[in-house]
Length: 194
Image (cartoon, rainbow, N blue to C red):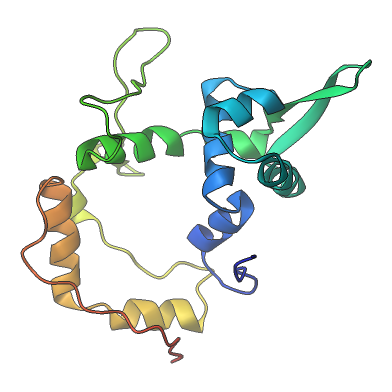
């Protein structure tokens, strides 16, 4: 069953999710970042079915994130490689992994992956940096504002944020292993327009 796509939604996050496709697409990209490139390796790594894997590889290729390259003629076999556009997603993998490590959701007693600088061997950590000064920014100083490409729905979303919600985000950023003391509001399943 196909889920509704994000066509017409002015949102960079939704657009990235649409290009990736779904959880299987994200795991295929994870494997490509790890250095896997062959169909059977993707199958063994994720346990995904042949039909799903084939469909997701086609989706990633159609969205310009991967390219298929023949590496054998008889029988004909292909490998998959990240395109320059696909390599833009690579920095997302350490972020997702390190968030998962903080949430302790991997089922492992310690982080299963370690991201390091190839040249120095030092561990790489994600963070927020000021675009002008290059200095690290605390999550509590993060503010989201309207961008030049904002439409009415983006402006509506930003107008609806409540002061307490920003504090919940900042509390979670400061204490990633503790739940926020405030109860989250139940979200309506109805889509509201401005």
